[in-house]
Amino acid sequence: MQIKNVIVGAGIAGCVLARRIAEEKNEKVLVIERKDHIGGYWFDYRNKQGILVHRYGPHIFRTDLKEVWEYLSRFTKWHHYQHKVLAYVQGKYYPMPINLDTVNEFLGTRYDSENVHEYFEKNRVDISKIETVKDVVESQIGTLFYDAFFKNYTQKQWGESPENLPKEIVARIPIRSNRDDRYFTVRYQAMPLDGYTSMIQNMLSHPNIKVMLNTDFKEIKSELEYEKLYYSGAIDEYYDYQYGKLPYRCVQFEVIDLEKSWAQPTAVVNYPNDYDYTRITEYKHFYDYVTDKTVISREYSSEEGEPSYPIPQKENIEIYKKYLSLKDDQNVRFVGRLGEYRYYSMDQIVNNMLNIDL
Image (cartoon, rainbow, N blue to C red; front, side):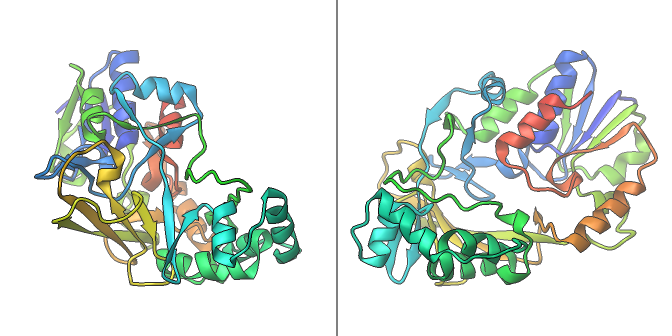
């Protein structure tokens, strides 16, 4: 088969690239996807009650980038939604990120905004050189809140003590001195009106784009003649694991239908210290559903399974660089979370693909 452009992976990175090539260059594009669906981790579907369920955990679109918002708005209308998260600690729910209510409810105090600043300034740990996740958190909010809200959650999520994880994983902990309990405070925040899968189907709906699902690129590679390859799969797999597998945290989801109207107060509840799962998502909160049943997913982090989050420890980055050094074909481009071995937020990956040279 002769095709000018081949894209491996029908996640959002590959789909944005496919649309750009089809439109901007008026060239044919073949998108090859191993799974039985498009959208990658953005994939969603409707259950028996008509509730949109995110197969790979909650994805809330948000951005301050007008270009990204306007681009995606070509392919969907939006349901405006403000995301809220609670943490279940010592038998009670607390707003996250930490805000004035979190502090007062946890400490039993009546602080105002100024008092909260003074509290954290007094209790933060003075660390001369910030190197680990523990350093980042304790230097901002002190040991008490670190132990209660972050220590065990991070351990569950990454399978590693925060003392051994690089600071880049958390960068900075948002702390609010007011009562704003929105998880994100960005300019644009919404859910695609008919879901992410519908939005991406619209993106791929172009006469220059062909999609092959349930197809392994390596199995048909010898049958393809192409000029450019954009590879959004795992770079270590592309090179047959010559330097071993790159480590990832993997996530498993247990989806449960419930015979009741609601299961929890907000869409997402984190469980830092209780149970084996890291969080529970209730999908009804994302849209204005009217139904007497609901659906949740419990999220478990593990070492085995489908790669989810790159682990940016120094030794892993060095392995990635070794794989990158094997690249001897200028017409092959590694993109996305797996291809670049780097975590991207939803808007970051779209923005990157909008600005990549085709």
